[in-house]
Image (cartoon, rainbow over all chains, first blue to last red; front, side):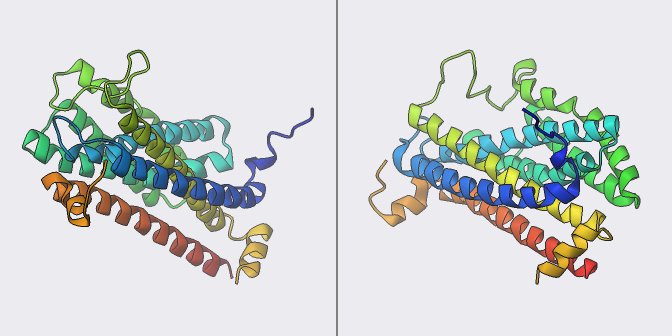
Length: 246
Length: 49
């Protein structure tokens, strides 16, 4: 087998592939969210303690997982770009940041709307909420820093440094409910213990997680395509694409 | 889970504001991101031409 692993590491060849993949993952996201919301609203029962307010879980937990996962993937691409000086890596890191910030905000927003009826407050400065807020500021800091530097290759390097330093915050968010006494509850889903939720609730939440995941892949690829066009605007392939797209 | 009527579904057992406040804002933000992405691509193509 002779596979050329570097074939798609240049913007010129990755651009059309990213477009096709974005379409497929977008369709999968739509399908998964439709199934997940149906299960979440019409199959899953009411919660014995929280009544119907718990149904926020179907977006809150997937969004919170995505916010952390996207940061790790962003730092991975940023680090790869820093180590190997590859063009596409920095573009991928920049493409992830806004979607990561979006899902961090969604996790905070839905958490606040869930906190009011269950805890009696929109916000507390406990370890889980505070570290998730810091994650939002890390995404904003990454985007602001990159926007402030004109040369994209230098912006990639500066952003990569910030992304890699900021990654210490991710395990702090994840383990905050264990390490400190927080108002936020502990993990609902664990790989070592049997689930503490009804099976239909858990299934709906996991399907929504896949839906959000697929959406993130699609959105990031679409943004990566924009960044490729912006940075390679004087290249032949970008010119051909722009002339063909009427 | 059967809701019986649309009113019951929208009321969410008295938690309608919190549940729909979460879902509508999430949906609006995702739609906004897609609109911004489409506009960014149009602008990028426009600058090349």
